Length: 342
Image (cartoon, rainbow, N blue to C red; front, side):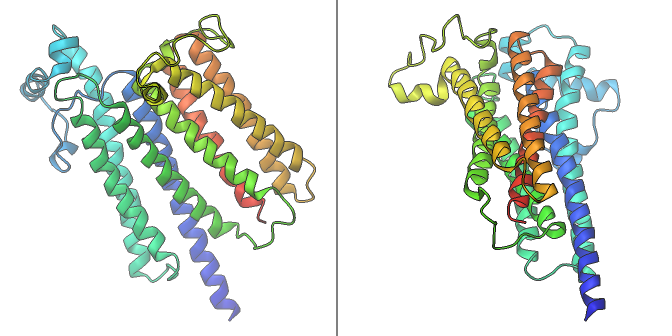
């Protein structure tokens, strides 16, 4: 019996390691996706070719054909008219890298998954979770193309709703894999020993909501609305938050309102992070204390990156670091959520 238990534990560790590796790829995918948006590269590839699209243009004739296809769409005609083919290659690089990384993630997940299945290394209770991860990954590719299509019609920009949905699904996949992997190596118990489990859940949920708001900020270029902090346009509550009619359309369509909401949510998240740290920084379990410190540190760094991004008018390097910091903060929150149940 002990030998069987050890074998199961070993299999779980291997599966957890594999899932953490896939999480690292998804993390990279989120960051590259952010850079693709920041460099306005997302509409450079106007066709979706899941198989043949793996191979980029290899000679000048193929590059010319790709460039000519791009010229048929609004982004070139309304924004980039006169762009050189070398400039086109620069934006093509990021979108191609984004799509190639997506295909690579599919392989990194699917190949080990089916090997584990064939070798009967996956517990019955775990199989539905892994199958669902595979389905979600495939859906993410479809959603990505659905997003790109929104910018190939009349308006040379993708829908900020579809962009945020694409980002949100990527984050959901990351959360799902990360939590399952953590559970395989750091099992939880039914008793939380009086720790603030509910508040930790709320914290993780608010972090997810904050990332979605960040997607709206990116989709509407709302980060450029104000380059001052802590005031916006010289005001604590800037005029124009409810400029659009009807009023509720401002919540997700007014760049100024979205920017303000993103800042406000950051303050709420920071307050909760400090509360969680205060509750658990002296906990008897060392891993709980460590997780509480990681949560607080990651939020402080993330807010600092956000402020630097805003006051410097959203430079690509800082904005990409800010997006990466969001996933790091989320990971710290998920780790704390696991440990409060230890």
